[in-house]
Length: 468
Image (cartoon, rainbow, N blue to C red; front, top):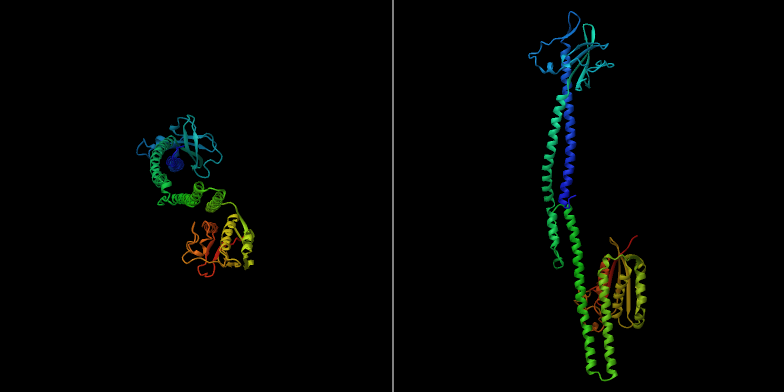
């Protein structure tokens, strides 16, 4: 079996073609043989009819055949004809000299020649085969059985020559077809060669390149699948670069702070109080560093959640209540009242990774509580959007300082922190809302802050409802 696809296509094309040629040659040979046999039968029938008019009984009662109707005594009807005439008792009344005394067909057969011209192939005593026609004929009140035949050796010689011609023509046609098939396969696979060359030139430095889709539909389908693979690889590389850049950017500040605190403590620290203050600063920066690392890891997990197999069906209001219980200490400390609206509509299910959606809810609710003043109210509302597919809208309204003008479009960007004085002291790493947005959008949802809200901030989450 050839190693190349081009060679295999040529081989299979040649095998199919030679099979078809052999079948065609066999059918053509059989058809030609049948045509020549029918022609031979027709000639013999005509010869029998001619002979019937030339038979006569002489004065001694012997059956004779007029031979003077030929213009040339070397006529093939005289030279090749094999003829024998019998009565119904089987007695031979006439036998042509061309038989050399041999019987033509043996004893009479039952009803031979009665229904017309009966044909068959017989073998003479010398081993030669003859195509024989039998016919009943009445002459001078006597019933005669006329047997007339011709040797089929010329017919078989002609058919053998025809067969040899076919056998010679088939290899020639096969060679020409194989050459044409190889050229056709090369031309058909040329787009695949270009795709292979193009794919081989794509590296990590040019993942944005794509395969051209200018070939047949089957190759275009393969190119489309490969381009989708490149899209996923490019996205993965982009996420990896972004994660690396984000980690390097965010870890640089706390590490520098740790180093500065340590160096200052070593240079200026004289007593235990100074060292305790330095250690306290180190612990504070370590806590911030740990939060940043946790946020980065959660962000990386959320980015990889598209292929997650941890999806389950769960109710949104149950998840919201679980998150509120988790944040219960913060709610009690700030004496925040939680009001719920349309809670029965939140009793619907979604299909997603529950742990990731829980993180998104924790980040959004913790963000709302963090900016809510003491003794304020946090409003949670549920509503169903009548669309296809159906969405659940979950809104969180706080009474905090709100979002500064122009920051609604940047609030979900990574490491974004507000520059407003009212929120500057409460800003975190700037990754919580980015993680929430990434998770919600991974499962076909939406999240945004209503820009028309002028008192506090109103975060809206839309999630696709799961219908079993």
